[in-house]
Length: 134
Image 1 (cartoon, rainbow, N blue to C red):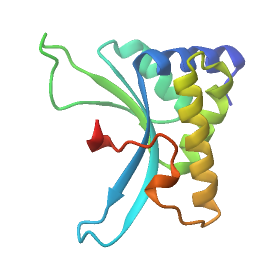
Image 2 (image 1 turned 60 degrees about the vertical axis):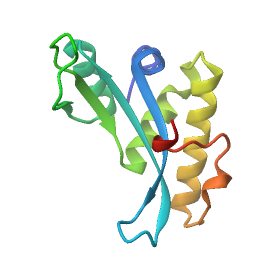
Image 3 (image 1 turned 45 degrees about the vertical axis):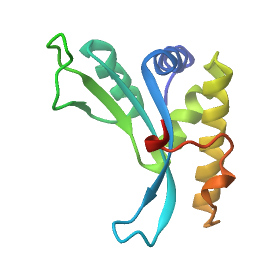
Image 4 (image 1 turned 90 degrees about the vertical axis):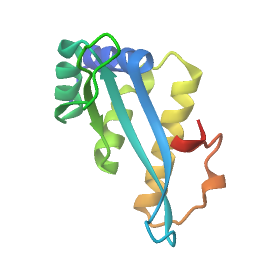
């Protein structure tokens, strides 16, 4: 469990360098659509990513591409619904941006509905935009 100081630090880092995502995915056959959520943090400074990965209980990975300046990009991400809920539940009270606060609340609500087996369509998600819509 994160301390309040760790949760506040991680919330700040996520607001500055992170990505809270609600993603629509479709099976390769195009038959099944569902909504998934994930939290990802990426930057060229390895130290904060290592600490964030520890707090999020995940691994540090690197991207295959370097930045235009030739630097390695380090990432820490959680994709599992339980892990996403744990991270967001810990940091949601420390978000300063309404955008991040609302997105985190939407993600938690979606994951609760998914856990209860309630099927939802993409328009259910308030302000939804898929990864490909940006």
